[in-house]
Picture (tube, one colour):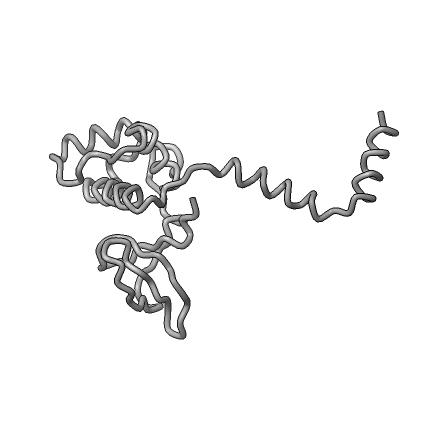
Length: 160
């Protein structure tokens, strides 16, 4: 899942997908209604890749939190963000047991749950990074000429 192109813009609801760069900022598309708007460079724009949750020890990237929610809900929608605060806190504590209760507010929990449900609905949650890494290794070896591969094999056999 590439969260670097999924954006949160302060003062605007929901999440946005980056479409293109413009002279004064970005052209983004709302994941909620599909409308395209300009996001200017003076607005606070954060990609989900940059966002993390405060914990008692170290911050957890939002991607890991989303993955834990996905695993807990078995790929289904999380609880509604309009649920009572106590339910939201209990649910989030199951996901991130050591989250910093002084710095992570209920509004933050609601936002994470809204984002999760929106990304799930738009089928943008994909946690198969391990496969991507192995594909990259395969692609790299495909570019190496056969003679070099044979030389490497011979060197390995000689060293044994």
